[in-house]
Length: 234
Ligand code: ATP
Image (cartoon, rainbow, N blue to C red; front, side, top):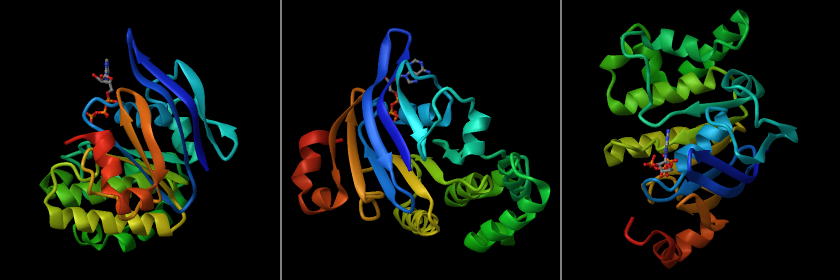
């Protein structure tokens, strides 16, 4: 289980994350909603070791993660799928995937690659194509596949629905469910309130660095006024 306890992150004088607590259980999806600038991405970056905590702690299965450099966080089992996907456009799909497996032994990479191709047949069909030629939805799947190459226990998703048409978002959501069903804990950040609500078990709403609502997704689904109260028109 991933656990954040009273996490604070500062950029100079700005406190971007102010006392965030959350847990992600294996095989579940936790959703963090909130408007632009709420501190969602910074929370994910803190878990991934990309920004230091000013206080608080992050742990995975009761071992501390905070303070480790990003490559060691990956080795411990936490993979980030960044906002905007950031695939390497000139490289092929397979090259992109292999980069995601850089922390794993060679024999293992072959096995994991086969599993990723099974989960994302579209990547298998186009394994020798340049990643830059893929559509936005396909690039998102490639970014998921690249994260899976490190055999993570936890996957961090930063706005996976961003810029995608609703039907493509549905496909992406199906893939997120598959990842969770394989036992991975998913921490997903979204500005889009609809995306992910149906598959999440826990929801957090962030505003100005703080968690202003925390509760089961069920409560949000059955009582939309909860979200309106915290998100306004966002
Ligand atoms: P978005 O959806 O726009 O990414 P967010 O909820 O993910 O929003 P963050 O990107 O985490 O929010 O930003 C939280 C706050 O930290 C904002 O006030 C933002 O301006 C600030 N911030 C983010 N990155 C930096 C940085 N590298 N340097 C300084 N301030 C930053």
